Image (cartoon, rainbow, N blue to C red; front, side, top):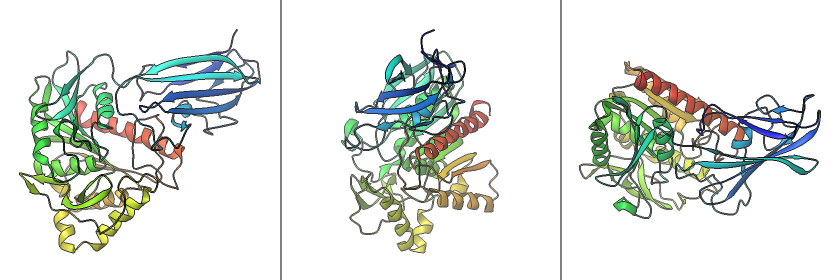
Length: 419
């Protein structure tokens, strides 16, 4: 029997675990497994692991720990999330996935330094039964819906400060593949594409209300919707549900802020609000005078320090008026945070919001899922995570992303899909 790389999976979706079994090798033989993929910038990401085969000449990656390699413990997905950028000086040090195109992975098995087996396969971000529509007017986004289904639970998905449909498109496509009608909404583009704002200042909340009205009026959707957002999009989801949108049925907010902060352009803070309503700015906490570069991925902790300083220098009145009145939301809430957040103190802010909700005897379920070690960037499960804190490892970040994703699916399943 020739050596083989067996790819065992129930579906082809990226967020579903894959088990890899190596077979046909000699008993108790040392072998090397190499994996490689390209991100959307065409950059090579790779991982490797050395294993000792069992008496049958096999290795099950879900059961076998590598002798050495890019990860250390038995993990069927370890070869995926442990990938590193081969040329780290080529742009930002994180995996760029800004589309829902299938992702190709190539695995090579080596014995005695010779390639003895190779396998290339795809993982999908959109299931075959999901229809995708591009929306350019009266808002910019992508609408995903399972075909030939009615009365679909509905989600509005909003990314953070990177702008465009980064994160929101991938999350919306995966959630649509689970049975939801989802709208990934773009509200910022630093190049000003599609007429979107080119800086994060006084973005009109009326824009999101218009999108929510549109999705609720689609013949296949329900009148009530859920909100899913990350970072500034997480802040946005809480702000919309507590002050501007009715009929919100559930919120999932990744690493949100408890307050509205000042806006910014590429590289610098501005003394203007991030949001506006009816052409009037929403009250905000200003940033201190600083030359900190908001896009400096080489020193991400500088952003956390900036937000902590903003809290310290703000007046009591500013803090009070800029606080998002989360107790006025009228639905279950899942807050996801990390104690190693390099952008802002999401853990502390989520703790504060949870306490406020308890003090107000909030009548709906509230969950705060916090991680001792996780990135501010909760990316797609099993893709290489972004490491933005010195105390963070890829294993920590990958596990947190997987856990948060499963918690999101469970929460939405409870309150929207079967709620």
